[in-house]
Length: 95
Image 1 (cartoon, rainbow, N blue to C red):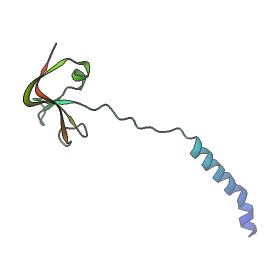
Image 2 (image 1 turned 90 degrees about the vertical axis):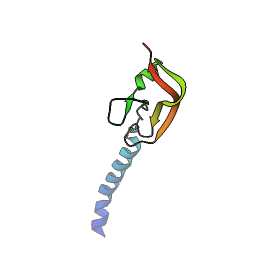
Image 3 (image 1 turned 180 degrees about the vertical axis):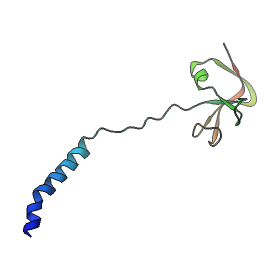
């Protein structure tokens, strides 16, 4: 019993240090990168090209046709993601 009582201050110090660090630690926020936007017709093996920067700058046309113009993949990867068509038509970049 005396051994246990002699270790109580050390145990209290360890618990206090643990709680002090646990409640004062900075939050680690994981920021999601902006989603990439693709369009068919790229030279990559999956057949899509990344047009995120062009779309975000507004320098594109997507005329009204039945083909897909710009798409977003669930994980930003055309090889493995689930495609969501954002705009129908034929993609053309304006200068």
